[in-house]
Image 1 (tube, rainbow, N blue to C red):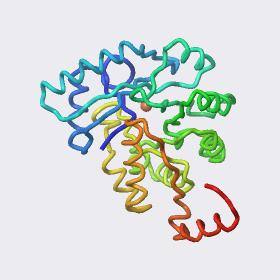
Image 2: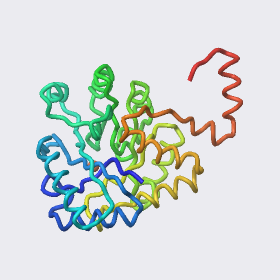
Image 3: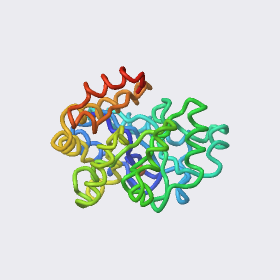
Image 4: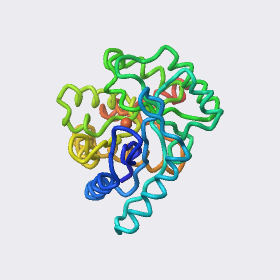
Length: 264
Ligand SMILES: [Fe+2]
């Protein structure tokens, strides 16, 4: 498995605090079945700035350590970037990193609301050929109140990424229901651990895919897993109409689409 959102690098943010803790997390990830992890330290979230060259250097050091430990886990570079007024300027200045240098940018909103500029920014990024991956929309109060806000962003080219622990129910049944509802609305494209430490916020990716499989079927769980692979390879992310699939109307919908000349 591939995890596309992780605070496994030490000394950058509120994730791992020492190399030993990073190694414990990597062992836990390995036991969970994860072989590739994109390290995404917080960037411009008001508390932390993760300089790109420092991230690249830390990823290199960590991979050497994992090699020494003979642990079959590879770390790839990235950042979790908080939406801010200077984002496009920072991009021009080379201060922002995409996920494994792909076309995908992990973008974080404040938990209380979706900033007014979100749509414009997602659109501007799309003009640059960049797709915003919205981190944990299930934890955003405005999206929970009004999932259409996320739909609007997805229609502009953004993608949704749920936290594994939200899906498993580790953070309560309410958050789990919100997460599964967003999946059913086809507003989710990835599940990721967003692990910060080995105990309180661990990797729970395998369990989250198992839950998706149980609740929404194997095809949906596979879709999310394969999207993580596609992202690391900088491939396009296909859409999957989950609600229609669940109703068993996929074929019927295609017939209607071709009858009425609708493209999807
Ligand atoms: Fe995160």
